[in-house]
Image 1 (cartoon, one colour):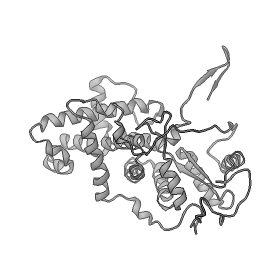
Image 2 (tube, helix red, strand yellow):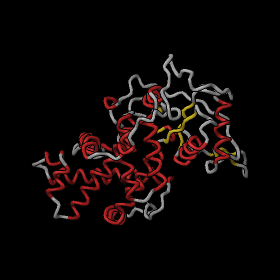
Image 3 (tube, helix red, strand yellow):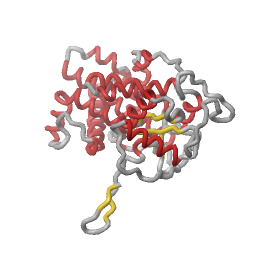
Image 4 (spheres, one colour):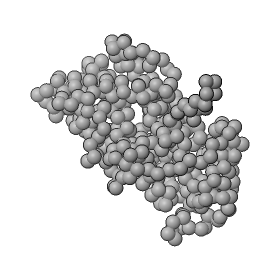
Length: 346
C-alpha cells in the first residue's frame, strides 16, 4: 500500500517479494473472460441449492423462527476470527461522489492520510463506479489505488429487485393480509430495508412451514425444488410462490448467511446471480457495477485477492458468525446534539 504522496513504480513488490503480474493496470491481470460472469445452471444449483439445504437445516418445525436467529459457531468460515480493529480518517468537507474532480480530491486525500504503498478501498456503488472510471480514464493519476464495491448496498438492492419482481403476486397480498404499511411501491428506501428483510425472511419461513406440512410424508421433495417445480407446473399460484421462495428469497437469505459466516466464494457468486436480478428490473447502474466488481474480484492479482478474501467482512465483537459488510461499517448514522438548536449528524 502507498501513501504520503510518494510516487512508487509498479515494479516494486507488494508483499514478501511477490511481484504483481498486472500487464493491464494494477491490480488487473487481463486474463478473465467476462462472459464467465453469467452463472451456469450448474453454478446456480450449486450455490442456490446449497443455500436452500442450509435454510432447511435452520428453519425447522421445531424452530420455525430459525432464520431470525444468529447462526451457530459451527457455521463460521473465518479461522480464528477476532474483533476488527479500525481507525477513522479525518472527515472531508464539501466533497461528493458524483464528479471526477471530487474523485481526484478524495483519492489524493486518502493518499496523503494513509502511509502505504498500495491502497485497497471499499465503497457504495456510487463511490465504487466513480473511482473505477476515474482509474480507467486517468490510469497514471493514482495507479496504486483500487476500489471494490461493498456487499451491503448490493444486498439491499437485490432485495429491492426481488420486491419489484414479486410485489403484485407475493408481497402485496401478504402485506394486505397482515396490515403491513410503508413497504409498498417501486421506490427503494434504504432506511426501511432492515424492516423489509425481516418480513422477507418471515414470509420465507412461513413458506417452508407450509411446504413441510404439505409434504409431511414426503419431505424428500423439499430437497429438490427444481423437480418439485416440474411437479406443480400446472398450478400457477403454487409454482410462482415456490419459485419465488427458492430462486429469490432463499438467495437473499444466502447473501446474509455468506456475510455473517465469511463465505468468500458465495459472496463472489452473489455478484454473478445479482446480475440476473438487476437485469430483470432495469437496475442499470448495478448491472454495470456487477460487471466491474466481478472483473476486480476474479481478475485481480494474487496479493490483492488474498487481502480481499481474508478481510471480506468486519466484526465488532469477534464472535463467530458476526460478520458485517465492509461498506456497512461507516453507513450507520448517529445524532450528536450540541444544544437546543445545534445538531451535528455523523
